[in-house]
Image 1 (tube, rainbow, N blue to C red):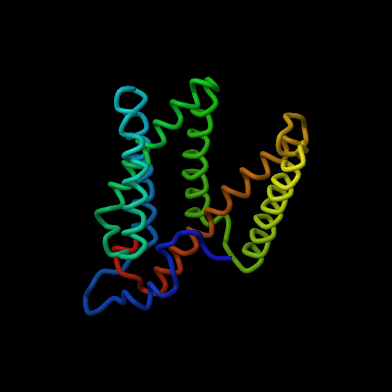
Image 2: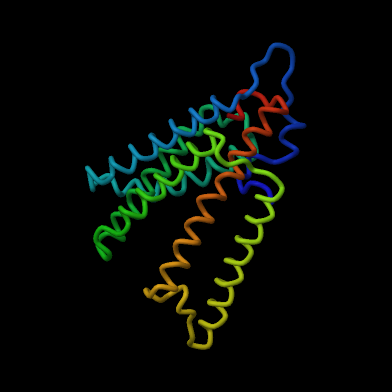
Amino acid sequence: MQTSNPVWRKDVFNTYSVQGSAEVMTVDGAVNKIFALLLITIAATALVWMNPAVSILGMVGAVAGLVIALIISFKPVTASYLAPVYAVCEGLFLGMITMAFNAQYPGLPVKAAVGTFGALACMLGVYKSGLIKVGSRFRIIMAGAVGGIMLIYIASMVLGFFGHSLSIITGSGPAGIIFSVVVCGVAAFSLMMDFDMIERGTRQGAPKFME
């Protein structure tokens, strides 16, 4: 099971090799940039909430973010200066979406966004501390967990065509709550796969812009 990040492809390491005295990426450098991009995204989201009129830029951010993501995927060397712009675009889009859903479900979108940001920061801190190591067993467990969750959602979709639903997904009882917690946990721990790729890139001497 590999990272879902389209920029971290195996062929990237072969295409962009470090030559001469060129700088190489480091774990600390990548971690610092992750925190910086997280703060930029949060700031852009907060801007929309403080100035609702700015929410109109949310759709612009969604489209621009998609375009920038494609550019970075095909030309990783552009990540150094396009990543912050991408973070701003995603922050604007997130601000617009959370405001729209907050009108229907007051308070819920904000909690979800804060939880997401918190999960990233928490898992990044756990990984950097070395408390959890990503080994072959970890990858097998994550692959099984993600596959199992996917099958449950597929089954729910199929049953939906016949007017039925799985209470474990749609219900608000103990089973539904436990399932939601498990899904959130798997999603959080899947970030470890991305963090592991950072270490791999460092060991392979990936260029600085890959941070």
